[in-house]
Image (cartoon, rainbow, N blue to C red):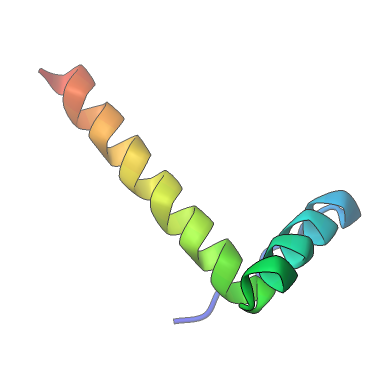
Length: 50
């Protein structure tokens, strides 16, 4: 599935720099960052539920 998001210029530059430094494309860097954030939020929600 594909999603479209809008980023500020500063945010786009930030992720493009990371992508360049890691040899990945910006889409993969953003995908990895969002996946990690989703995991952290899920763990936090589970912890609060206890």
